[in-house]
Amino acid sequence: MRLICGRKVKISDPMNTDVIIVGGGLSGLALADHLHRAGVDYLVLEARTRLGGRVHVGRIGDAAFDLGPSWFWPGQPRMAALVERFGLTVFDQYSDGRLSFEDEQGDVHRGMGYASMEGSYRIQGGIIALTDALAAGLDPQKIKTDAGVTTLRDGVEVVLQNGDIIKGKQVIMALPPRVAAGLAYEPVLPAGALDAMRTRPTWMGGQAKFVAVYDRPFWREKGLSGDAMSRRGPLGEIHDATDPKTGLGALFGFVGVPAAGRMGQGEVVKSAAVAQLGRIFGAQALTPKQVFYHDWAQAVETASDLDAQPMNGHPFYGLPDVLSGLWESRLRMGSTEVAAQFGGFLEGALEIAENLAQDLIADR
Image (tube, rainbow, N blue to C red; front, side, top):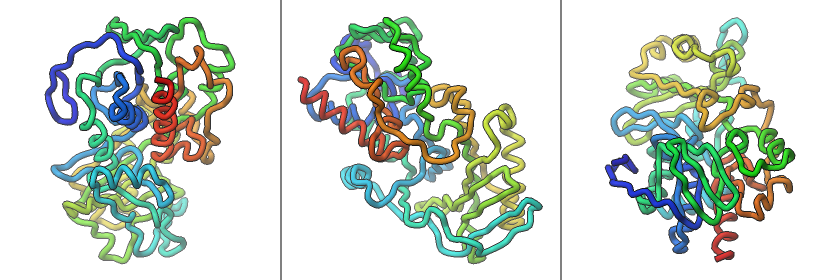
């Protein structure tokens, strides 16, 4: 028995399929959704014991707080279409009130800027409401969790950590290219292909997120937006993450300490983050109901050692020529990092899934 979308389902072990999708995050699930609706046989292999990949939440009762991506934006049509298709509730990122700024000495200044995520959208129940909806529409027998891949063979064969071999006609690597570069390939891929995988930074790969949850968003009563920037840390950037359904207030921040410096220091980071929220938002922030901390750099399914180096900006993404046509197009890349227009965004995961689906369906 395996847990799929909250249901215990008996999984058979199909060893042959048309399209093998390695990765059960947003891009992998979206691709499976396209193939499912087109009647193309597929199998999703996810190394984690859960689906969603970089989409992940912390939960308190009915409230969900994003620990992975939190936002999407106007002008991202695929996200908008899926939200409408599944009847999900969208709300604006809270931005009313003054921004707070903490200087190097820990002194706090108000109203020195604007809410940096103003105009972005969030989904009630977290972004996971979208991946859960996609997964719920798939055949549970076409999903294998706890199914880490070790080796890919031209032919096509995929070898799992437990020794199982899945045979197919196409394999789609719906996981970060740097993670894909760490798998074994038989025959070995050209050096240029592996180099191209390694030089594509994993979006969020070096990030860690911290969330503090409260009975209510008390900072709003003080005329504060919940947005803050800090030069003291450990949180470099903070935003309001209040759950609109339950009214539980929440503040979340990106940890500014580099991955190597925070390794094994989770409790220290959490304690320092709460103290920082107290400096910025007052004594009420010192007693959260619960805190969540997720270090993506320590998740081997998401990040490689190369992702420990922080990014200075949004990378240039897209599919380089050397990664196109591998094994006569039987092996294809399929994560947001290879999307041409919206690389690095949730929309990019949907973009690459849509483009791959069009090709795979046309090739039938």
